Image 1 (tube, rainbow, N blue to C red):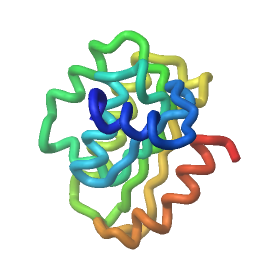
Image 2: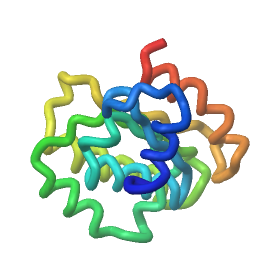
Image 3: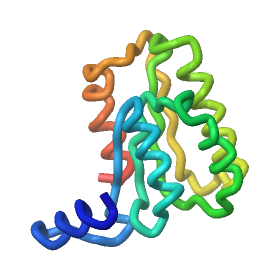
Amino acid sequence: MINQLKPYIDSHYRTKTGKYHTAIGGSSLGGLLSYYATLKYPKIFGKAMVFSPAFWINPEVYALTEQTKTIKSKIYFMCGDSESESMAKDMEQMIAALNTTRCSCLHLTKKQIIVNGKHTEKLWANEFAKAYLWLFKI
């Protein structure tokens, strides 16, 4: 993704290549991956859509968040309250860990928990525009 896909996109399309113009997003395992990418590649990804993140798959990401000193990426977290017993709780726990590394006054984090939201493409599609507009302030 970093060594082949992004360079290919930037060389074949008219893109703004800086991290403040580069976002990553996904849902479920893709949400976990998108969040991890902001931690691992902060010079590449300045924004992330983290929908219904499967943080339970790799709980070590909580410790990694707390160990990462400066996380400057804008992150839009979203999940439904009817996805699983732990989805919203896990997401809230990650946001709390993230907030220990940066000041909430920067307004770099947005959280949405959708009432009756289920782990489906319909939920993610319905929330995509809101996340995009917030991340890019259009």
